[in-house]
Length: 102
Image (tube, rainbow, N blue to C red):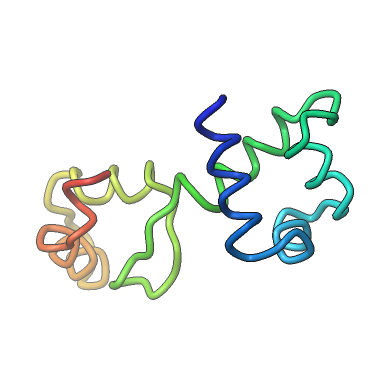
C-alpha cells in the first residue's frame, strides 16, 4: 500500500487537493488526512484511486478509458465471431501499444 500512497500523494501534487477530491467523490479534508496519515482507514479511498488513476489504460479504439483487466481480456481473447464491430475491436487490440503492458 506504500507505493499506492506515494502515487496518491504525487497525483495530489500534480492536480491539486480539490481536483483529486472531486475526482474521487470525497472531501478535500479526506485527501489531506490520507496524505498526512491521519485518515482512520484509507484503504477504500486508495482502492478507488487505483481503479480511477492506476489500473486503467486509454483505449484508442473505444475512445475511452478501460480497466486494465478489460483491456487484457479483449486483447488476449481468441478471434471473435458474430459481428464486425467485435472483430474490428479485436483487430485493433492486436496492434495496440497497450497490449504488452496489460
